[in-house]
Image 1 (cartoon, rainbow, N blue to C red):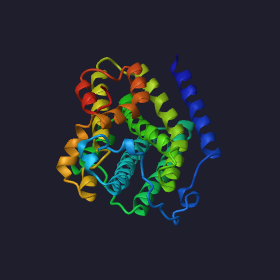
Image 2: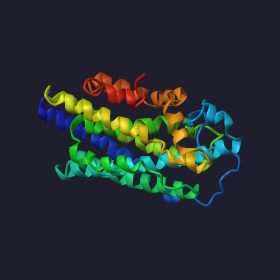
Image 3: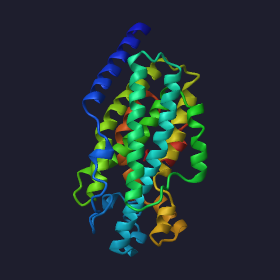
Length: 299
């Protein structure tokens, strides 16, 4: 395919996504009833998706502690999601800075930034509404994250975006259909899932185009970058401070979660689709295999 055809194809995709964005979008400020009371006795995430589910520590917890852990874990996931979406916005704006703003591609990137601004505000409001701290990633990961918009480029950049988005997407799709979960959490998840589908399409096509032009010399760096970023994403989803918040020993619980086969299964399940795609595109391989295994995305 010639460069002109590739550009034309990219523009067609961007135009379709722009039309879809104009046709269907949500404003969490008005589409969510933030004043509605939380429902006593309902969980905040499906029980089997809690990081300690299936451990001896979980068996010793009271039903109230388990619900409270789900509350703090959903706050951790949301605040880590917010952190990564802010990094994503920086990366997209960096792309726009180098682009012709009159192209549909650049205009859709700006539209996605607008979506992510609303999503970040929505996640922040949910964390505040359920009465949890904005955990975010651990401090060293937070500082390392500042490097990603600087060192990230090419298919690994968009692939890293996909790992974060698609892991969260699969978890949220399950949660929004679970009537045992708080209505507020389900509505936040529903809005994010519906709008994130466009972002996933955009990023997937960028990965395919990028891999078609990447050189053999660049490929090891691309594989290392996406594997390392993915490892930090999956291992940051649950901040260890959530365990202390529900009366558990933080270090003991964190160790139990990291060694929990059920939690490993949850991460692997949430990343099935994106890992298959990345493998097909050639982004899963040496020198990133150790990081992929540490991410729990590979068995």
